[in-house]
Image (cartoon, rainbow, N blue to C red; front, side, top):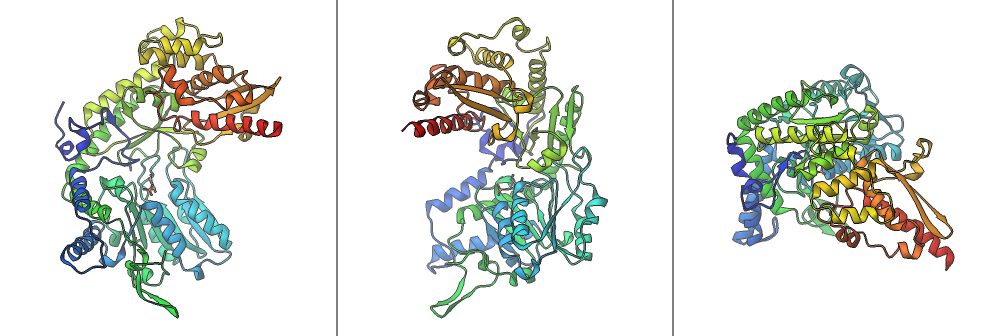
Length: 555
Ligand code: PLP
């Protein structure tokens, strides 16, 4: 395997790391640079506060903290270091703007324009603000592949537009949006512009002066930096005219019981002790990216090309988004194969990808899917990892389409699911390997009785799972009768495990059920430890609520 020199900067890939496997989820968060870890550790080894005390260590740390602001200023080419405001991350940065946008702008009949591609963090704050102040929320449309329709998009921006808020890069699909054209149009009508750069900053150079956007936001943890720190960039005159975000220490010029005066930007927006270690770590990450930009871009481009070709050669695959203008993120679905099933198969091969709606539910609805698999690559990935991923993906597709090339060669079609009470748990607990246990789950999922289509409605749907799940609880002769459904075979198999145990029990007996103990007893605890993510816990909560309600009526 050709050596990727980028890997040596990340401790996740050294031999002592707990992380074993292939990480293809950098869009969720990137691995952290060793320098970032070292700098944050060093701060915690001798902690002092900033902007308060004047003894040497405190003033040195304040100096480093403010140097970090200048590093980030240079990272996005802001005009003035006071335009860099520290926040917890992109979500807080967007909420800050929603809270501080001058209320005089928010008049009834005005509008805010966002796009169909936005992350929830760049939808919900504007939705709430629009509702509160009687503004209209306009949504820029996309084509069938999920690419912004530029002509229609700019046509939505009119003289009533107060703000255009759009992602630089779509987190769900990886498209690079034509933000320059959008900013230009917004300027012609005097609208403010917010660019959510969360998925852009680690992949491409950003120049906010060249973009001429009013606000630009991003999170440290998506650019090899710490979690819990991010940037809110705003043009200085705008920041000067905005009210503070939160109030308290750090942002105060003078307080008396007659009234208080605040500092100017950026401290005006930074009430309380900031995330000092995070800020120092973020500056280290920004320095690393800046000095390795060419290598990062080259590596990601080579990997992207390789993955694009490999994915495109698979039958039945649909890659969403813009194949031309994109970062190294690939979002896809496979005909006839549930995305959650595929991702859970990849998971057992130690390959980490993201599955589901990617915090972009309206986008998924517009594309007519309930989720995709997202592979997001960073400069530390290798071609060898992608080859292994493609091989595992092919095996997974074969398995779920019952192709004879399947890794479980013919076993699925030869075997029948166990269907006597307690047999499923017994079969799983006696299975010698994870592959065998998994096969039993799949078989149970395959033969699981489905709910009639007309019952698959919102009232039975359980939210918070990576795959869609519906659940119907009834009491028959004072005992629990449960039915459920999911497009995912694996989820149906997991439902079968719980249902087998709980069905026919009295509500008070159901309430004694302990999921972890049960999973342990059948040897699944190691594999299904994150039961919240795969939805079993949410299913159980609903069953418990049903039983509690019944128990209350009996008391
Ligand atoms: N915007 C985009 C495009 C994102 O991808 C994300 C996170 O995935 C966010 C906003 C929210 O970022 P954070 O959770 O770091 O605040």
